Image 1: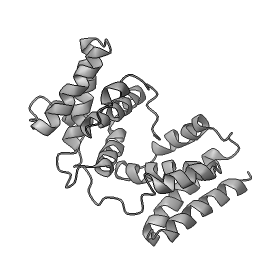
Image 2: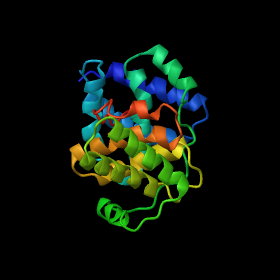
Image 3: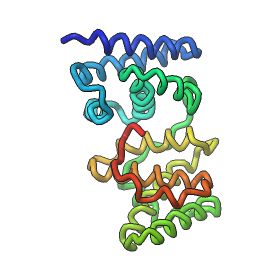
Image 4: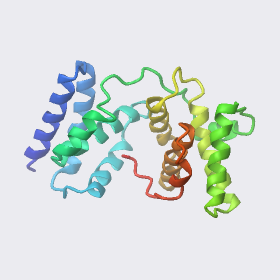
Length: 224
């Protein structure tokens, strides 16, 4: 099977990371993941859905602790695979390539333990404000209370995962999300979690337009 184009895309991606100062160990980890990914990509149309369909089954073989690094590689590699120069340039500017990932990871747990912890978990004012704002926005969109309750619970999960983060920013949020995804064994629940954490993020950062972001995208795309 001819993978010349995919191989060239991998080399271009790794070369750019190297010029930006990525260490050898990080390059090796990304290379090992991408070598497996391009096997799934060979012969596929240059399409986002095709790409996601190649990534998702591969992620099921990845150890839980490696999900963030592998998903980062998959997200960053996508425009190289598509040979989309403009997208590569845009990614290079904002948010940029993740050359120095956080050394922090959320504490090991299970989805069962996380759900059980919500009954007794205490949230401070900075956490309760976005939760209440998110719930209100969902109700204003006409959501039934059962939907609101479910989504708020999922939003609380990400807050629990962030409890011990030394810095709370977009990188810690993304890390916490990526390392929580493999705890969801049921794919539909995983997709819903992705939808929720992306909606909730806008409330968490205090985006004044956050309310306009709810119930707009139900895809739960693992690569966004």
